[in-house]
Length: 298
Ligand code: GLU
Image 1 (tube, protein in one colour):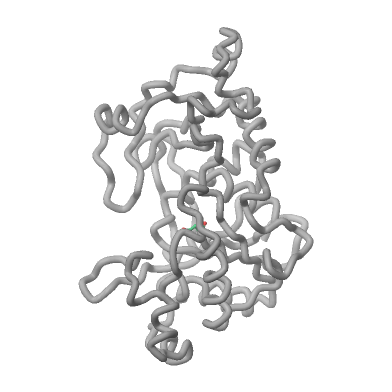
Image 2: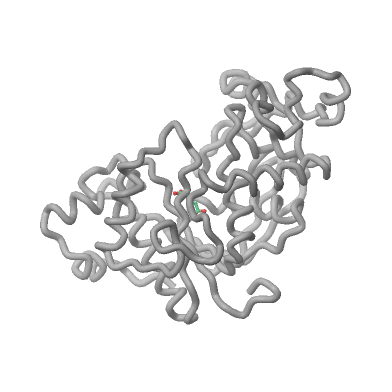
């Protein structure tokens, strides 16, 4: 529990980039069960930061599908609450002030590498369990202060628009340090900074905070005490613990759920149309019957 609060606060944090599928529903169901067991609250946060992929249609569908499945939340974009707004696109000021803290603490640097540069120079191949290559460190020597001193109009660390139009901002990870946490489902976890994951983006070149930063800022601001999410984010948890520390925040507890696989053993994704909650509902499935088929996860 976060100091100062005695109440369990969990959250559901879908991104409206496609229709939700059965894998999301199972993770959310577990989150709901955990909140209920602790007589706590559940918050719905609409992670609509990714303007390119975000669609209003999906945001509306997301809420409808979750409600159909039997999910219920006490705070969220549709019901309000004392930690509003619950749409990330309306929370830019929180992210900007966290970014300013990271800059002032010397935790970040501007990076002008393209994806192609990074792929060409990467030290490690794309890890299968992660979606990010390890950043080779090309721009690592750069400091926000140096950039400011040059008076470069592209000053990537000034934190005012259109600052990051030409550069992204990366978090400098403490190479060699082991980041450990005790996962509520998977038990003790350890990841080595610089080996399992590298310097990661906190602010994108198109002036949008990264998932890592927005998630940490919001989990803290919304006083989330436990994060329940898919096992694909275990390594991101290590990154986020570093961000919590850099921002002087207390990380929540973590509970990662095993991912749901399709018949071929492939992890479910939004492209698995047939297993989208929408299609399942259209084909006459009931949420109760779908849930009965699940193995319990503790
Ligand atoms: N918006 C993220 C996703 O849909 C959720 C990440 C999280 O729960 O921290 O993958």
